[in-house]
Length: 113
Image 1 (cartoon, rainbow, N blue to C red):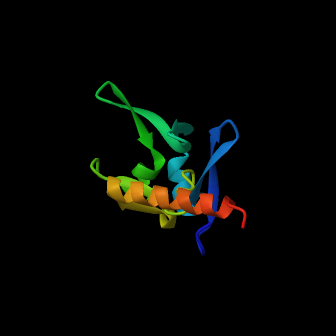
Image 2 (tube, rainbow, N blue to C red):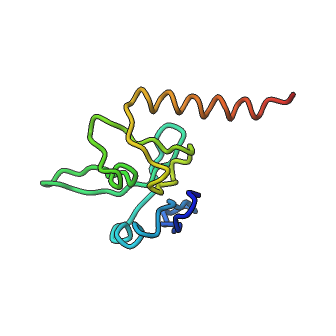
């Protein structure tokens, strides 16, 4: 949890919850959110439509107002932790590099000495 920020959880179904800042909770609760699997992680998302076209809105991208050509990195590696201090707008290359660094660190922690 990010220090000094109150945390609330938004239900996504199937026992999953998105963690958000207290200040964002009421605004985000106007929609029904779900957990959407992408690669090996779940992300908080909702369905929306604009001019009759359906699309997926990811909570982290919505909160950060992320440009289409950028990505949102979850600094702690928890894709359901959408507290603002845990989110950062990065390039695709930066996000991939961080993802591999987190995976490598987890693998190294699992190797017995």
